Image 1: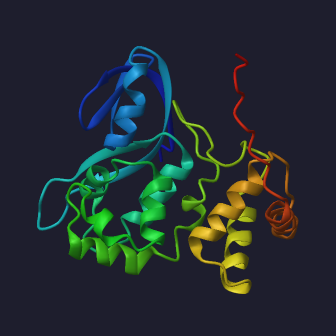
Image 2: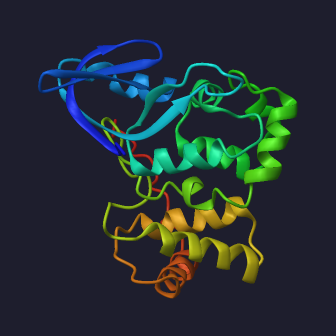
Image 3: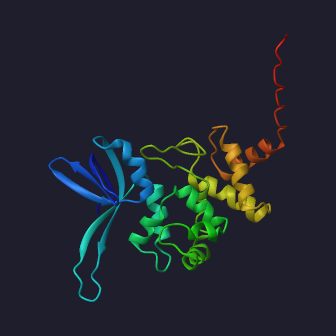
Length: 228
């Protein structure tokens, strides 16, 4: 099983990244969003987190091994959940992933069928199916926990400070126990994580969330006037 690939990015096509590892060149299928993030790194050493997959094999067709590459384990995990939706295969999922995993997850969580239906290969019927199947499964991705990779960085917390499980548990508590909407819960957690403090568990993070919410807003500075 090949789960990670590090090598020199030799060729970047519309659908594949070709990496040279010693005397061997390997190709990995990639999404459009990954391609855009890799664009400025041709000729450099890069790392892709991979899924080893077999294409074909139904009805006597030839089976072909293939690698699918992602810039972080989080992106790879989202892809595996995304392709669990009936009718969303490898190629369709990669074509649809033109935005970050965080953005896609927020669209799913917010039941933005209209926005999802504009993704390549995803019409309204597929968008509704995706929302119905995944809405309660993408909280950790919608919060942007532990995103990374070339050209990417965590959007909420520095890696290692807060685990994805702590963030997800705090989010679920805000929604299920405290009655906040998904959007408000995300906003509140983002504000608490912006302080870049470590949180050992969801209780610590929730305490920080409400401390942040109770802080008075900083007064706006009045514009300076020139003396005549």
